[in-house]
Length: 438
Image (cartoon, rainbow, N blue to C red):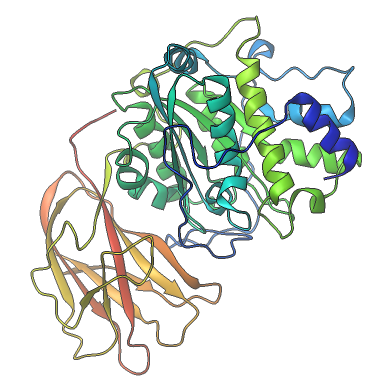
């Protein structure tokens, strides 16, 4: 970062990095790979640029107010606060921390949240956690980093029970970051809103904030994701807007923020952490606030069909017939998978009970990665092509079936055709039920 900008950041607040965490989890590593323009394969073609959405008009008292007397560098930080939303849930959580109680802060997103290209202790998520530890030294603040490289919000939703809730129980604060990983498909939009609604519906009533990143070429799903934030009165941090403003004003360059096309470098992570800190500091100011909005208070803008999503893998689901498949761990993030490399193509079948069904498959640019046919109760639902020109041994979710109520089904997966495409990996399934209806 340019010296002048770094000086401004340091003036606003210097971040001290501790070894480990203040009573929480230490930074964890997960499978990482380049994700410059990561998109989801949902059976629909991902567009290269965000579609135009209707932008909500927000009241002045809840929007970020830019102080014209600030330097351009200081304005980058302030420009990031797209909306303060409602601070009611944040106030309750921070009151617990002030009283020395235990809280959990969870971060879910793609490689930017995971901290790809930086050390775990340099990641923006870890830096914000450490700042909270400094502000509330008597509290035990657990750190849960559920970032996973190259994955969209659909997969974030599928794995949310395991990666967000299971480590420390229901979180108290959740940051959601998928703006450069998502596409503009209807499935993705509904999954994103379902993830937000699921987090808001947890018994702990966590405070939820949305972050919007961008790539060097300007790709971001902020335009449609922010509509979800406006609907639920959520605080929103737009790294996208702040970077764009700074670059256009000549205050900074993309290289100050990132060494590739998407991921913040160590100085970029510090800048993002300052934006998050600025949001917390803004909550202390005077002025009117929007009221808290729970999932039951509003009608979904994109849908909430998938809000009760759960994950199944070989640790929780036994096949009726395993055929030529074996229990393997092709990816660190999915250690309980089923894969086939060769055989008589008997297929693999499961008895499952669900409403909607997703498959999470192993994708790669490898000539042996084949296409599978997925049948539900004997009727073919879709083809799943695990070969992709932009594949890099990454997990990809795909909708198999949108149901009409919870029913018992038999799911069968068979490789399509013969030849050299003999490999197929089933990493997990995502399914919905009707346990809750937030």
